Length: 433
Image 1 (cartoon, rainbow, N blue to C red):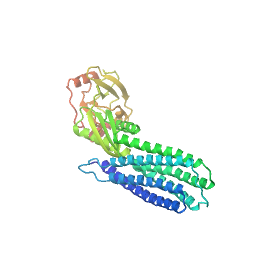
Image 2: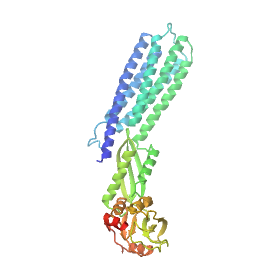
Image 3: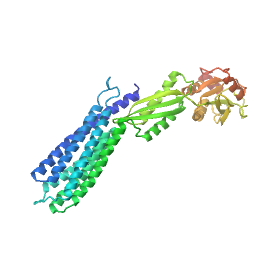
Image 4: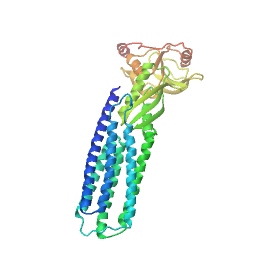
């Protein structure tokens, strides 16, 4: 397990614990609020407030379900559940959506009946109004906190509850208006507004059911993240292309699988290094990632890119210069198996007048070509290791030979690979001076 993976798991566990805490607090607060509204409604004969207490009880079940789902998701991975219980949170979101939908239907039915019925109240309802105002304040605070934590830990159930709590604010406002309208004996308005809000609640519930089902079916719900990951991996030197990037949502977390292609001549240990680098980049730059699987394939491209130090500019008849860093020019080629080399670019060595690390400076300029091969007769130690770290294979070329002759010898397997620097750092600096 990499350091990035351990860090991600630690953050994931902390996020789940935070989500559980908020869901549990919301459960207790909603329980107390529902009990208070039921008691006040019963004592002061406010049927509207009693109905709102039942609605809060439905919210209580949804919030408790969210807490239970997060609690299951935070359990350790086992032999039977090697991917964890993250999807328990998604399953609970289905239940939350169902409860919200049910609550919406109940409110709609209640609103329909209230259109034709006006409750007569003899005394001004101070306590029912106070209970409704308290419900509005508590609903606002719960919405803010649930949405904040839900987005931070990517918890669909907490976000769903935040949406329900937000609608509860309007429901409580309607209840408040209904209590006042009942006291003033004004018909129709209360029931009509309740039906409108019930439609919004139904929309929210059905939306959460649909999204949860899509998650359970491993649908791709985040194409922007998919494109961002592909773009980020393509910036890694040595990656020749990115194949399918697949993202599965599992509760509050995402699991990423992708295929990258690299040079067919890349050693196995280098391919593993490349995969580790891509994995670390994803963990570092993207949140809520629980696991990353990188599959490395040899590139299917029909060409490779090569760079050659030359002493003049005469196309593929240019002659090889005797040292990499001190060459006046560089030719960048695309090589295919059955065609003449294609010249991609010429680069003039702008660092010739400098004394130290000229080759390194040249590499930093031309590295964006995503080179596969270098043909040279001599190369310094730092330049050698820098190119090898960037997955460039280095082959020996004879000084004075043309580019065409060198490529033909390479295709006929007549050139040897350089596996160590041709001279040390001290010799490089001595010759430079």
